[in-house]
Length: 227
Ligand code: CO
Image (cartoon, rainbow, N blue to C red):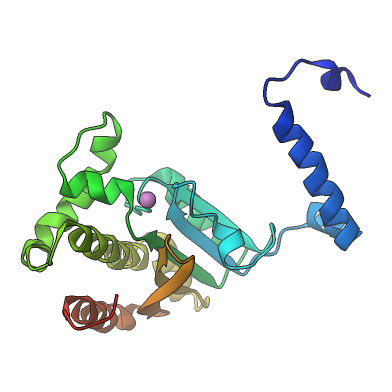
């Protein structure tokens, strides 16, 4: 027992959970932690919402070490965010991930706050990026049957726009210019059934972007489409 173990801890139950988790993982694969400590070798980077109900590696059935994760409020990827861009640059240049998955989720609180013009504080400034998307697609959003549908459409539009932002980033542009294979995917997650849907975006070169974005927009603009 080290001196650290003797410190009072109001979150002791989380440490207990952690010990149980580590024991279970080791029991199912004895070299798990020693392998993981040697290196991380993920093929995927996940850019998703910070929402606690969207656990990145779990919902795609991957273990820690198999997906490199970046999360922020409302899965926004903007060109001035050095945090997200640095994570992407490290993932692509150093870890050599092959896929960037940008995953939104229906019912996103950040997206809903924008549509409902709600104020929360500092985060409102971050969510201005979604206000811009709302303004860009006002006719499409106004055509929705109700508030929930509008929120869900804006969640989808947000993913489409963030895929476009990713494709235009210097990080991706440089990777493609040197012939590195990186594909950007646009997905959305449904909290109600735990299922992911692709928005039909699989951008692996610059020329894919315009066509695929147009097709994705057409799909979500079609009212008969099952959502
Ligand atoms: Co969210």
